[in-house]
Image (cartoon, rainbow, N blue to C red):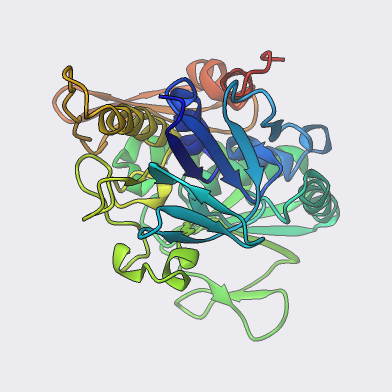
Length: 368
């Protein structure tokens, strides 16, 4: 099987998991524009606290035993020649190719540039701005907005912090009103001003922001935690705009194949398989796609296996940290209800370490 080539485009959560799963099956080439894995879950804290600056960066060098990681920018998938074209002109042949380019997040949850040094400078700049700010405005009351507001408040107890959310309750897309109330209670108990039903836009003057009712907020620093954009512009520019739905996500079937292509798969935030764009869903998709790719590559044998179908994740455990020692955990229970757990569970499961030991082990490093 080692004479078969699998190219994985994108080295995020889904990409590294899938590449590792297939490392013993085929010659795997993981292509990413970054020189290291970016542990995005730790990025909000890294944008606030200097001692966390280096935490999100984990080298790729121990991920694959047989395959390799290529740093570069993919510009096109040539389905006729079955090759992946890089910006450098290099072409990588494939027997199966996986699109795992993820989504672009607002800063500070973004890897700026292509090197660790460039990204670390960006985090340092955010830390300095937060340290000097008199009023920080966070726009967006989903998990990222709530988590960032808590991190900023704990780092700057003397600053004014405002969280503005266009929805009627915090965390409203999670479907748990109780979790939203718990988040609001924590934030307001820590003197964070929470504005609900407040759709914000930049004002006329620099440093001013206006809500839908015309109310003006002055803030010398703002962060917009209002959603993500799939990283698929390169597919459109490369002639595969027909692979995308109106929101820019890659259209896939139940086996996570791009429709009409048996050898092209898409996993993680980049596809339209699930509305829940969270790490557990990305990892589950990577595992299923690895099975289906292995099945496809081995389809000539007499012990042919059947592909597996992905079932979209509608309800899954979700943890929203309030700094390193508190948070809220939502756990689905039978009957469509959601159990809401408090600080101790949230701290042990995520808030203290932000799953950094788990991801270091995934990339072949010790947890520390």
